[in-house]
Image 1 (cartoon, one colour):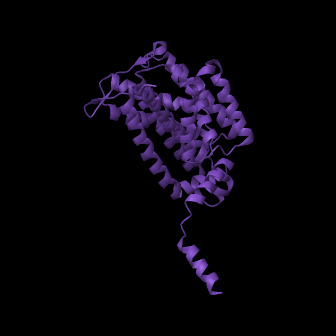
Image 2 (cartoon, one colour; image 1 turned 90 degrees about the vertical axis):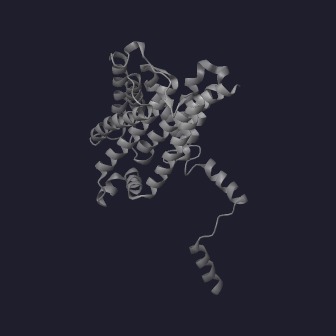
Image 3 (cartoon, rainbow, N blue to C red; image 1 turned 120 degrees about the vertical axis):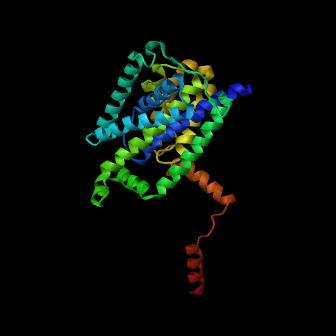
Length: 310
């Protein structure tokens, strides 16, 4: 395998990792049934692509893609307040199909012919798969740091309580509606960022790049890896994007394998392969503790001193 081909696969894997992390904010943290994330992936992609094809700056185009996608996500967040569970999932699926139809018909998006995008130049360097890979890795690291901080903040704790029981969260004075809208806005904005990077990495986009099957792939990445964790979507995205190479001998059955994996995970391991309550993750942690003992906290030392004094 040549290095150019390897970086092509890695660039795709990191972009879809970003998309999976975006979906995880909405579904994993806020507990909202989002099944149409590809629509916002496409909104960000087309927004950024239209700006750069008209002479706009690449980085500003990515920010614009985030902004436009986040605005559409906020609108969906408002709509979601009146919808729950299955009805919300069906609504987001419908939005995905509507957006694909619009991408396919609007003149500004290139219609059925699609849109060709020139490779951007960043800091004097023409971007290729290698640079897109490194850029996206940086974006993932920054996003993970921000999400880690978010989960420890009041906002993260509020989302966790809403995910567990919206009624109980509301009884404790949490504005459930506000946090759900914020989760949709942030998640769809990140999906828009991923779309902007994807469009410029590919150099050509069409409506089929954002079809419902892409949403299913993103859901598979999050569910198979582990909902509500940072490591889960990353692992799931890397696994799903590498499967086409692993299953190259069974090219006609890839979609069947994706569906089968998703069904098996939901049925037998809903917490994902490396989710918090996953037996696989528990076994890995036990193995890790054998080699790296857990550091004793101040509370542990105090408890030991009390026990020793008895």
